[in-house]
Length: 104
DNA sequence: GCTTTGACTCTCG
DNA sequence: TCGAGAGCCAAAG
View 1 (tube, rainbow, N blue to C red):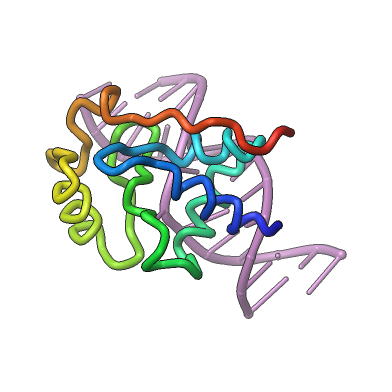
View 2: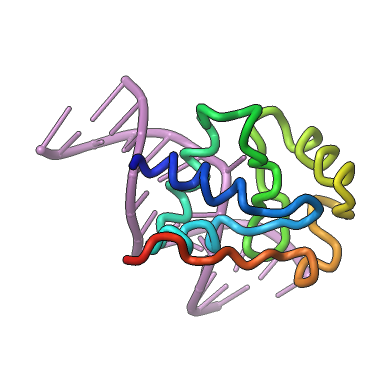
């Protein structure tokens, strides 16, 4: 299975109204390809299907979005995730720890 | 195949 | 608290 497809599968597991980090996604993959995760999502082939907007930076910052950060924020807030100045409020509570699907 | 490119993360001053 | 620098990895050129 391709690297990006694993990401796709993992990201789908994030429940609505919760967020996760690039690091956590990479961790679920069993590696530390934080940047590769973002890179894969950037040109993500599953754009409408995968909720890539639920992925944020490890420090709670929103990060970026292929269609624009504002769009990402809007989608998150629509799901109940409050965002202030590009950062997720109560990030620790919103954070969803991904299970390790793929062992190293 | 080697080089470049990011929606990243960590460390240090 | 904030910014710069280095390290990191897969994909695309």
